Image (tube, rainbow, N blue to C red; front, side, top):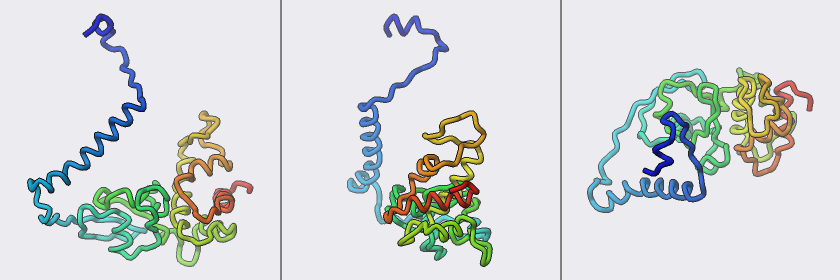
Length: 223
């Protein structure tokens, strides 16, 4: 320990500096940890044929309770699509990069391909199938139709669920990277805010101007 460390105040805040080297080292460590179980199987210390015991999961999906028995490694997206036939949430990239699988967990948007079903035992899940009330579409669904906010439609369910979560985030006062005035209780819902907050949802048909217009209409903002 050098003299500088000896003379440092005990309650002085510790400063951490993120460098390119630390990022590379952290990523390398994560890859090694991921490879360890595979290496153990290859070495024979773990029986790769040993079955994984199923787990029971209770989910409240679109207001209806569901009890499922799943492999613990089942993603929420696969539970919805493969076990409950709720295929509105799409499997696009399966890596959390396109947003087509976005659903709402307790009102907050999430990429369902990146989370396990067992992690949400007892929680409320809303998919695009649960947005309409009978024959009455959700305001965002209506706006997407009126503004032609979709073309092939593959990303639309994720776009709409994400937009609902995004509008709730703004109302709760959550800022974004482009929020100019952090003293306001809610950010101004302009095009820049919408595009930034919806940037995790990719539209391969590039209907972005129409999507922005639909969101603004549903939020009551002049387009």
